[in-house]
Image 1 (cartoon, rainbow, N blue to C red):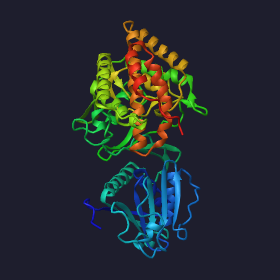
Image 2 (image 1 turned 90 degrees about the vertical axis):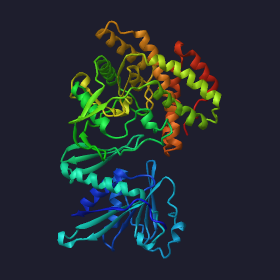
Image 3 (image 1 turned 120 degrees about the vertical axis):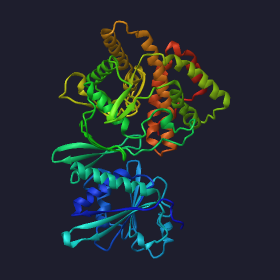
Image 4 (image 1 turned 180 degrees about the vertical axis):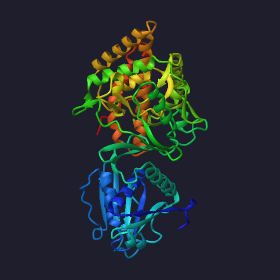
Length: 513
């Protein structure tokens, strides 16, 4: 096999005991996922199976998960949410060709592999992989080990990030902290709780990664629509929100270049309850008040990140809004059996540009962009609107105030009854008019309908893309809800022509499987 172009990256870690091994494997789990191959080598008793077991238990959020050695079965499969993990032991492999027989050549698409005794199949494993070689160090203690970690090919970058993460944790005093896995989101970010005694903080892993190739006038999708490609916007907006009395997490430690933050932990008091989850009215009321308060303030376009480093909040202009809703043409319509021709594409863009150009004239404020229940935490012991803990704002832009109210009241993951939506919309308008009698309620209602139609059109395409491109079919279950919200917004008289076009050209989503 030809060696990968990327040079290997290696570093060593001293592990005093199995707890230290578990911490290392938890850190590695934070940075790896679908398609990654991790090999574990060392003599009998070196700790390979213990390392694999620790990683699987962390990923399953189950410290008691049964993880037997696959010495005799050769391979065990674990379904951990959307991720399938293969745990293999090649000790009894006599020929590398046998990897195909047991399902490891090639590694199944969408799976991650943990492989013990990789030396039994030289040359048969993927060129891009992470190797961890364990060796005992009895001079350091009876259970002490040293792990030599090497990344090959595309995996070399992940080993570099693992080294940077370990250095940050040690520097910040969290090297010995207990790690607890947290659910991720639709992005490439991942999270863990770090415990020192009973006190917890949040570790954010946000690798720099443009979303897609440079197909939008030489820009990636994320750059074209102003999505954050690193942690700097998060740091800037967190400071900006906190300076104005709002509850964004305090940032305790940061590695801006590698994309790691250790932040305040707001806990887990959600804005929904029950099964299926439904809004908690009181909390939605305070969240609505918080938006009205934020939107009533003059907000700067430039925010500090660090000494002599500033961040300019981008403008949510018509071109960015058009590229977002273009995901309907690129992903949603083909999913529903419609191949958009040139005329359909042109009609779509002309119609939407006229609508969005008018919406762009609305007063601008910080649009936090994902201001909805999964990203809000209820902080019971704080006062007034500071009870709203805000988690996700790194994609903030300057745009119409109505956008974030749509995000809250038309939650893509939670059914928000129409009567609650209307009550909160009325509450918001009343608060804005009380603070500023010149506030134009009718113009705001029109912009609210436009932003709803834009956001929900984009979400239909986004969820189709998450399924097809990123292997995340679970998001398709939200499409019928998004469709209902879209239908609500298209009922506004201002959008009558848009409603007619959608009725003719855009099929409803398939019912959830």
